[in-house]
Image 1 (cartoon, rainbow, N blue to C red):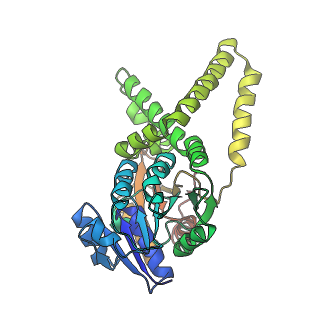
Image 2: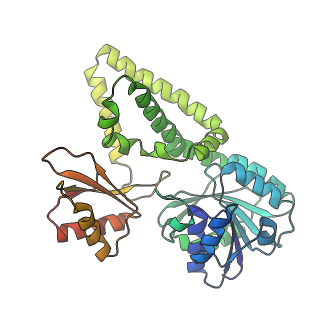
Image 3: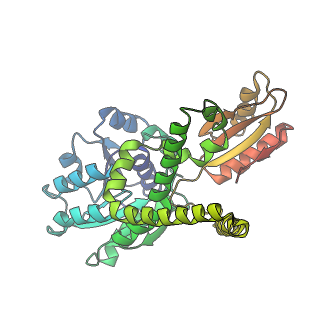
Length: 368
């Protein structure tokens, strides 16, 4: 496809979409704008965008596709601003927000002018942020939810999918209301639970100094989503509060049930509770990308000796395998430590495991 694509917000998501579109549609012109001028400059320097717009009206004026990749509150303000700008006939406007109902409602101002708005949510992310972390493989095999209203022509949806074909994502079309309900269950609510576990542990650590040390390994892993942006999650929770209040009520009932099993000492019920949880969790697709970005971690048992990290990373560099993050779990004296290496994709993790087993005698596991 040919045409001009204007991306507002040049972070990880906006930058990665720019790379995907340019790769699939090399004749297109990618124009970008970010409120942080350094991000715009960096995006141009890295070749993520072809042109940097001075402001939103300039960038939007001749665009065939406008992608708003910003926090939810900012997205609403941008959509309202776009509705007052002279836009190209036939332009499609979409967004990448994690909640959809309030954004789609706000976009009624575009609809009144006959401008097509199609809500969008690419369900992918990374440990890193900013345009420098943008990758054209970020969305591969991830779900990309689209929430067009009933009056939006199906041909417009197909045009948007064609523009986004280079993401190699799995497109699903649902209503905005259904989107917020589903993502509330599998993404927003788990973030609340992770944060609440960390908060409770923080309070208890005031009287138990060993808690932070003991929580350094597996506890960090099961609560790692609590490290997400507080500003972003404040907005998400407020925009999806109706669904989340209902889910919290259900969670309260669930915990009361567990409490009752403990109070009665019902061993059979406790066993069945964990058995059912294990069965459901084990049957979840292991190769799919879901609502929460997956963490492709490789655990490597290593001797506690100087230079061991550079040795392992050196082997990975030889095979041109990119690392997203690396850390060491607390080691015990005279026993191997554990090096945790995070990768962008499952394929990279598998290649890394093969590489390490080829060059070393260290044992590995994927921790799943």
